[in-house]
Image (cartoon, rainbow, N blue to C red):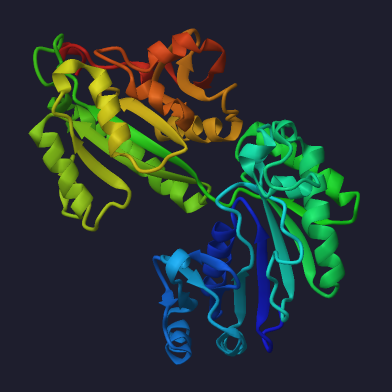
Length: 449
């Protein structure tokens, strides 16, 4: 990138434009560069670095101070709640001030695939240096009319026509054809000096990666630049269930001391450690929901959540708010484990998968949990292999992970029957990940402590 001249990248297509722009802006800022984010169409109002509705002088000052500004006018009428083009003069002035300008230059109605209305879309700025075409691999294998914006245009049809053609499943050949005819060929002709590259996003599971490699090979035969990406981290909600009645134990076993520490804290510390390690790697985002019926556990969780110091086993934890850690009271604990499952799911944010862990396995190890989470995300194939559990020889145990598509099945569970019911119903979809037998052992009786 020529630091003497502001570099302009236009991002078009579907299935991750905003996410790509956010990642590029963050990387640019970390490199000490001033970055402007704008749109030639419209985008959602930003949550941070917002310059929406500012004067150009204010936007330039914000970029100087914070490293990033997301600039434009606030939409009116049908565009209310969105950021729109700031006007040509303001756009050019901010481009001259920025080291990098990122432009969202297309719309896709939130779908992973698009065929543009050529002549009107995309809206590429005249000073563009590079054009990134994004495609969401989640479209592959699904009916065209469900996943592609303006699909009729790609089939040579008018809106409302071609009901049967719309039922056609998106295969790699169709995806590469739409990309080539809809974007790559016209853009390379109109902007011959611009770097043109395809980003095949959402390459999370095995099927998506396989389809992505096929599309990549087809486009590279035509001389196109293509790369696979997973722009958005895989999001796992860890639901740590600490509501057990402890009937065989004779009372609340979760606060009983095991090796000098309350039983429930052993596993929770492991998940907090793994959460931090995965965040550093950047590919998996984890939030933890501590579900309990017991005041002592709820109080410790809330203090950790709020950043107060918690003395666990003679050492200080906390001191600052634990991000993506939440405490949820289970007022229906007498019902059984299904109540904890429901409370955890409803307390979680948007997630790609839900991991359920009981709180009475004190010998579980961080490497085992990390292997379970990473192995599940890397081998996931929704509808085929989308449940994961720990196993030692012929014995399965907790924790267990379910893909987000099984959310409603999980919410429908009742009583003291947990996710094992779904695993028995869908045995071919279960993946096993290794653990030592002792790690799967739970504490049921006082003499085990």
